[in-house]
Length: 402
Picture: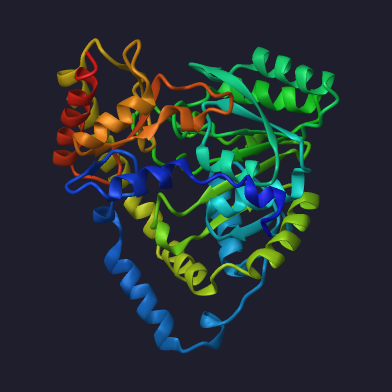
């Protein structure tokens, strides 16, 4: 007999974390799995100075519980600078600080999902979102993507199919900017058309944007990465942003901008989850924004990750030309490759571990049991030398398949 709830018995672990656990037992492993920011670009000196100043003041509120909604000066900074620069207008009541954007996904799910509801997602989609919504007893309808993003004809068909079965679907989850895992950048026209589709079908759009500031090409303009939320005129977009990729992930400071009714319920859900996000972490981020740290380091971040992407693509071209295909990402942390015909991601993963390299199974990002012909490779957190050697090892694993 078990004492676990039905929901707990069906909890799903993170596929990315699982890849890390399996790889940790392999000596000398090179991980192409973990999408971690590069520690060599962390603003160590700035954070040391900010932290020292905060502690030197000995203000009790720095190390105290805080408001569930978040540290007001940080929210005001977001409204006055970060969100304004992204074309998003809002008020204090629209914003919630979350403990990482992963908590944002969980909280949005708690507010919008009843057990058995269907969540509309891209194929592929972020595995962390799959886990968050699955653990709230959601079902899924996957919608294919093309070069411009989510396929709207397929989305229309998915909505009709769900409702024809008498099921409920309240939102569609998308990552328009350099999607994890596929690296796709949704076109401006597709974003506007998606917003129109959501209006016609009375759906909420949950827009996850952790990578929008990590763009590479000179041709990428602010309009290319303009959030869907910026054109939301009837309060149906929940926008998630984070400091994890543009500052440091260890502070676990992210934010949500949501329609006021949703934001109010998210605040109540967060009260029950953790009372408040770390005030100390929020004040460090506030200090970094006050000193323009994020803006100052942004160009070097983009150059750093663009160079790593180039190294990975060159390594694949030299070792796997003609055997795998991919679309060059214009931003973000990931390369999404299609494997040779007949190569299954699960069997390849086992062979890759023998070659002392890991990746994330492509099937981890699909909600329809598909995706076994894909693999996600991360170039963000390892050196140029490790990228090149990791691809050499992965190529050996692929070639060994025959």
